[in-house]
Image 1 (cartoon, rainbow, N blue to C red):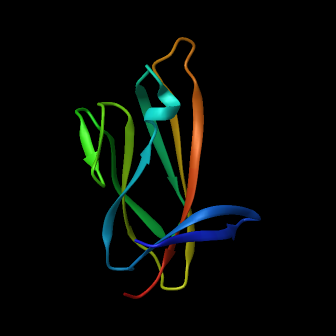
Image 2 (spheres, one colour):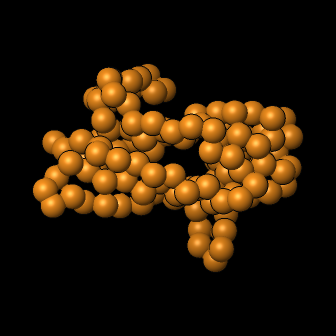
Length: 115
């Protein structure tokens, strides 16, 4: 997956490229934002044309690109589809287990290219 930046809907987003036939996992790593807290929920909003196949929060420790992350610190979306040449906005809105709960978003874009 390669990445750069593009404007989608008037706002700049980090862009990740994928093939239209690929179904891949995309992670939002929130360990630094959470501090001592944990993810309570993560909801994904995917622009029409791209498909959210499934999503999860890691229930145990997970290693991504050689770095280990504690349980309940990574939100993952499995995305598929898209039309070659299309760029799709993807948002993860998450809530932590703090009282009162903190809510925040992370948004990126997926550009579909033939590989």
